[in-house]
Length: 185
Image (cartoon, rainbow, N blue to C red; front, side, top):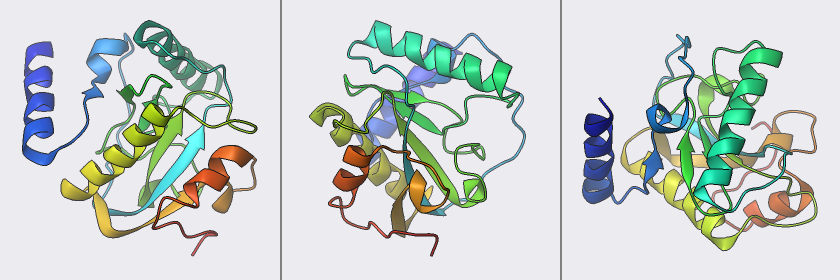
């Protein structure tokens, strides 16, 4: 099964110019019981931060992703990690709920968005250039795969819910990415 997943990931990279996404089957030991399918393409990409320590190596980011998943499933009682994707400061992209399952990342907006969360707290600093580049590449890939609408709106979590997420510094940065539209509209 893992070979098939890696083969499919390679095909996506070659055919669509998609970044390497670390499949959940290679970083998580938990079975998911999420059932709600996401209707694609979604109109929004919502940016988050995990408000946890950041990570800058594959091993550290894998550990952080597992910890976040444990918190979401054990404490929050969710069916899986709430985000569709997690991004480490080393530029690694971890599959959370992926392209096909409704996330639990932005109450009231989950069914119309892909939730991308940077691992770390970005209130007073930015994710690495590699992490930001990975997020932009992931969004582009989603558009090419018709998982995200070509006329999508980029939002911070705080645009759709009363929160400090994705952190002041990261929020100010995503305003410069293009396609940024503040607020719920």
